[in-house]
Amino acid sequence: MSILFVNASQNPTGNTHQFGQRFLSGHDYQEVALSQYKVYQLGQDYPDDQFSVIYDQLLAADQIILGTPVYWHTISAYLKVLMERVSQMPVEKVKALAGKQVYLLVQGADPSDTIGPATKLVSRFCKVLGLDFVGAATPNKKFTKLQQKL
Ligand SMILES: Cc1cc2nc3c(=O)[nH]c(=O)nc-3n(C[C@H](O)[C@H](O)[C@H](O)COP(=O)(O)O)c2cc1C
Image 1 (cartoon, helix red, strand yellow):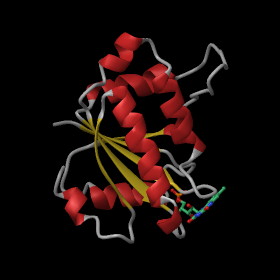
Image 2: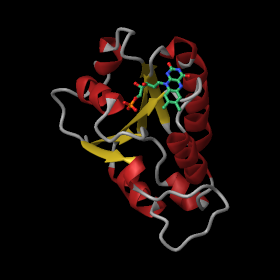
Image 3: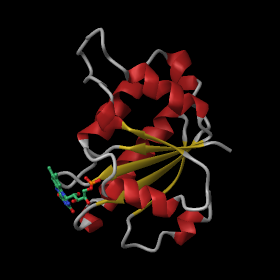
Image 4: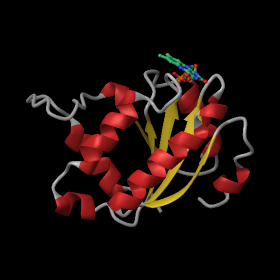
């Protein structure tokens, strides 16, 4: 099983990265920090867009761990843009991701009001796209139960 940790924080080595490390300890995995790539918003068409680099990594993974900091009571814009871009790909490219397992890690100063809505958002995204949403966790919540599903 190949695992990809998608770090949707502005900080490649910050708290979200560290939560991912804790969650995935003992597993081999690749990490991609979205802040290091140019993934433009829907409707922006620039020649240096790097969405396809991220897509190829998603495609190569069996399990996708989405790690997001809480920004203004929701997921980061990095993750939101990625979700929007994935959902608007040609249908064959969306279908190629079907069945992959998705986990959500929510890192925040106090993520307690965000974990519920963020889980709803990402699980709905997975349902529409045919991905297999496994569950979500915060660092404060006991996450070992979710970890055991890896
Ligand atoms: C723009 C911005 C908005 C934030 N809004 C929230 C928030 O609404 N709720 C919360 O719990 N933390 C909020 N935080 C705090 C971060 O989620 C928290 O510091 C997190 O650990 C940062 O992770 P990082 O080190 O990966 O960047 C915010 C941080 C920033 C930069």
